[in-house]
Image 1: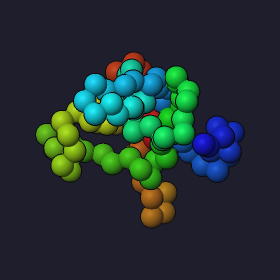
Image 2 (image 1 turned 90 degrees about the vertical axis):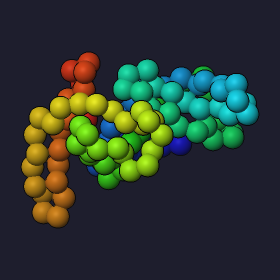
Image 3 (image 1 turned 45 degrees about the vertical axis):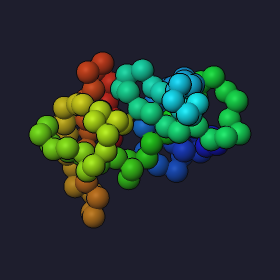
Image 4 (image 1 turned 120 degrees about the horizontal axis):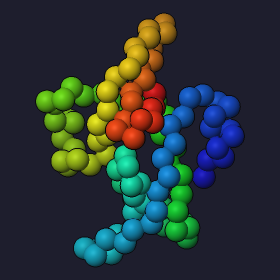
Length: 106
């Protein structure tokens, strides 16, 4: 489990709130965020009904509108948005994306 204060202190983080969902096939349990829709397999020791999902910018890939998403299941953990800003920071590129609900992530 990651403490939100520590995650923000260490660097830029993107936060999504999710709820526990039990899938009927195989009984697998996942955490699902409403919008943007993200699905994460639950850890076996988790007993909470809701959680915050922290995704670091280094774990986000950008795809053009017509690209497939590198073999992922259709619509699985793919968030649509509009690129608002792109800034080169040494060997990194900082990209700000606006989502349909007017929120943004980097």
